[in-house]
Amino acid sequence: MPTYFRFLALLAFKIFAAEQVDVAILEVGLGGKYDATNVVENPVVCGIASLGYDHMEILGNTLGQIAGEKAGIFKRGVPAFTVPQPDEAMLVLEEKASELDVHLEVAAPLDASVLSGLHLGLEGEHQYINAGLAIALCSTWLQRTGHVEINYLKEMTHLPEQFVKGLATAALQGRAQIVPDQLIESESLGDLVFYLDGAHSPESMDVCAKWFSLAIKGDYKQHNSYASNHGHNELGPSHDSVEISHHEASKKSSTQFLLFNCMSVRDPELLLPRLVRACASHGVHFQKALFVPNVSVYYKVGTSASTADTQVDLSWQLTLQRIWENLVRGEKGNDVKNTDHTYEEVTDDLEKGAQSCENSKVFPSLPVAINWLRDTVRKNRSGRSQVLVTGSLHLVGDVLRLVKK
Image: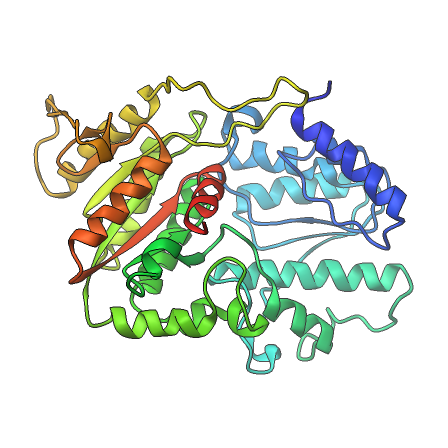
């Protein structure tokens, strides 16, 4: 059998061909040059979004090396777009484009004024950069396939109604997503709310931290534009109920928790400090960090794919905990050299197998961690708990599945 992603790519091509789709938008799985999606020899248009330090064990240790892998999707004579990039990356992209006679343009970020008073459906300032690239790719496709004659890129002061609607109603699960816990919500509005973002690179940690810090300060209306545009939200309560929960919860004191895991190929020594410092710059500090293993292990093709063993190896989560304790103590000005962490083996049924430190806990499973959060909320009805879930899209998906029940 092929690897999991190659199997998915093959399955996608088979379905697209069978259904005779009008247009297929293919997102590279990893890198570009050697990616399964790169078997397409003559695409209509190509795009490269903001580059950062991710998958360095495969793509290289510099932005130039990473850009070289990404530029592998360029095809001779096929137009391509990118967004403003660091000089090191841009030079490589331009060089690769020149070698293949590719007309490479830098798409300008979207000007919010062309949205006719609406907000982008996706949160964060960086989404205006992504939106500019999306407009460039879509309008070029429409033009090159004979669907329209006008070039919307040349006249960015006006966008077609369909473009505006698409940008305003775009939704992406697990990115800047706010979901009140369904169980606690039925007991007390707004007392336990999960803020989910699958950030897993240093750059995206900065963006995630800024979004979370601003979101918890109360602008629920803007941060739930998906619900207001659709009249309902599959991923949480209706827009109205979210606003009610904010109104009720605003009278209460709030506590922030971090629920975190990342794959072992990531470097938590880079990710966690970026997150902590970006949040601290907005006056946000976590009372506790909770580290858990992922639930999802469906990454193989075939009948042998199964759930994880009941005996879970928590060595990676304990490593994350040690990094966190050193980081927090350092932020507080304590000496972290040769620090012996005091681990408390918790035997309470609710926290069976948990490892506790002053500023963090390691739980043997995600459901146990969620139950601990729910119990904490029930014990303190005078406060509300805001939980940032980040570090892994696998973790975000697992949390969504649990809190929506």
